[in-house]
Every structure is written in C-alpha cells, then in structure tokens.
Image (tube, helix red, strand yellow):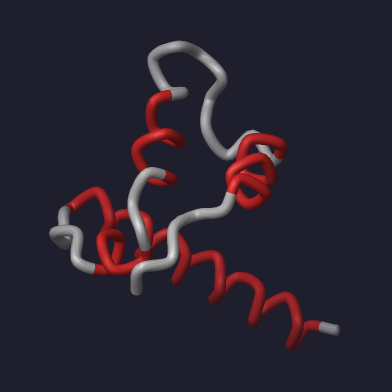
Length: 70
C-alpha cells in the first residue's frame, strides 16, 4: 500500500497520451503519480469515478459481444 508510482510507469502514462498535454491538464499526472497505492485506494468514491467505471463496463460488454460474433 505504500508503493508509489514509479518514474517508468509515469513516463509510460505520459507516452500513452492518457492526459491532454495542455497546461490545464498536465497537473493531473503529477497529482495521481504523487500518491501511493493506499492513497489512491482510499480516495472518495465520487460521481467522476462512477462515470469511469460505467464506461469501462460498457466497453467490456461491447468486447464480449464482438468475441461471441467470431
């Protein structure tokens, strides 16, 4: 739980362009990578997080449908 995000993982996230490169969004990588695993797990469960979980579930369902069509 005390493991921090490694510099290698941080660079990988940056290379994936998962966060917009504008100055208004770059802080997000600093914020998330500054936390350890325990801090990330204990963050409040907000509507924003729920939105991401719901989107992941929709993607998973679409992938399942694509796999069964083959």
